[in-house]
Amino acid sequence: MRMLRKTWRPDLIHTDLIQILERKGSLTDSELYGFLKEDYGDLEFGELNRTLMRLEIWGRIYVSSITKDKRRIELVEKVH
Image (cartoon, rainbow, N blue to C red; front, side, top):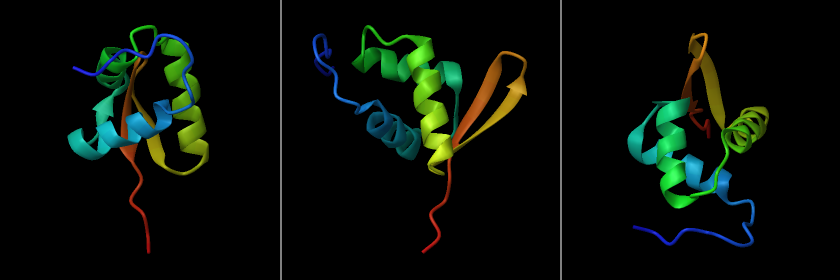
């Protein structure tokens, strides 16, 4: 288990989020939150939403609605 980041947290959540999606494939937002919560004990769901929005704007992920309260998160394939 990794050490929890308690004090100052540089904006590395997006990097960890991408790495999780690379390993696990597409996930729901609640599954992804669970994986990130293991590393960032004090992570709030709002912070996850802001990170997801930022990554979607940057074109790194795609977020789609499954149901009213559930979203699917997947990596966008890089075109070389």
